[in-house]
Amino acid sequence: MTSRTIPPLLEPYLAIEPSQSQSQILLTGILGANTNWLLLRYLYTLLKSKSQQQAPRPQQPQGQRRLGLRMPVAAEPDLEPSAQNGGGRNDEEGESVGVLLVSFLRDFAFWKESAGRLGLDLEGLGRRGKLGFVDGLCVGSGSDGEGAAPAGGAGRFGGGLPVRRPPVPAAAGAAPGRGPPSPAPTSPVTRGPVSQGQGQEPAAEEKWKRSLPSLAVADVSKTLHAVLDELCQQNKKVVLVIDHLDFLLAATSDGNGSVSLALKELLLDLREKSHATILTLSADDPLIASQTTTLEKDHASFVLSLAHASEMIVSLRLLDTGIAKDVSGVVRITRGGDSGGERQIEEREYLYHVGGDGGVRVFERGQ
Image 1 (cartoon, one colour):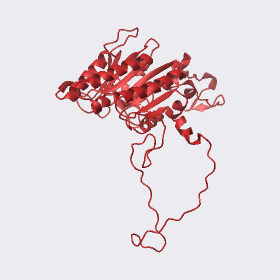
Image 2: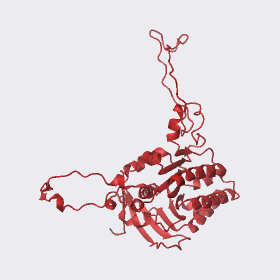
Image 3: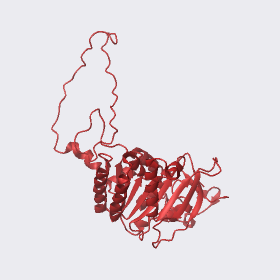
Image 4: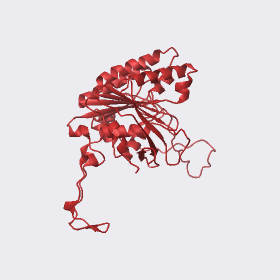
């Protein structure tokens, strides 16, 4: 059965235990088997709340017929909070958990729409201080919400492209494109008194959503530390989620390994402030096995070092036998190089299928 929330076979691996302090989970994917659906399930597990799941159930009179069977309401099995879209373990324990999502390949609109299919309101979570988002795709568009908007009508998180405006209609009776342009009609504009700070309210509301001033490691570090510190003040625990950090390595690598070393040091600093860290990286064969170019060597070294520093590795790949209509790929769970903690990880391998509506079915071979 396709699940739009959490596939049952993956539930033990998606939960972040209290004992996993400063742990790291690595998700790897390849072209054709990306980690989007898996990362969304991690976000759902971390950000779900009881208030979302305990919707009031309409009272029905006893003896109402259901599918031809008479079943009184008193005999109906009540669903536990964990059965209604998944019960939040962190909510049951009274712990406040926040998430810092850093995305280098996809903008906030993608995550908002995809998470909305699972029942998560990322906008609402951000306004309540449960979520912080750093856009690494639109760089240099005013990360702190200060100052005027860029020229050309680009917003705070836009890509800096000019906005197309509709043409001014020509005056009645004039042939288009001939003669001098007629002045556009003007009307008096009255401006009322603007209270101080009135125009800054949207920026204050969207403070949880930022973009990077540049792809320099120093600017990335400054932005991430600032957002992470704000989340730590509002939540007892904060989980850091970085989607495709290897893009930053590919975009700024100088060929001598200094960028890769700086990114590793940045991750160590961020892990000290975070309860757990979830990373997604590309693990295609040309980037890992070939290692013919400087970029491939830097990427392979970067991925392997993070795998050794991770507690668990969840890798996605295509079928070895080719493409199947009802199978999207293979998900493999293995222990990482830093799996000596209290959590016992059972290594497994499953098949999965991603439906057109975003639902995912995870099953064993032969089912």
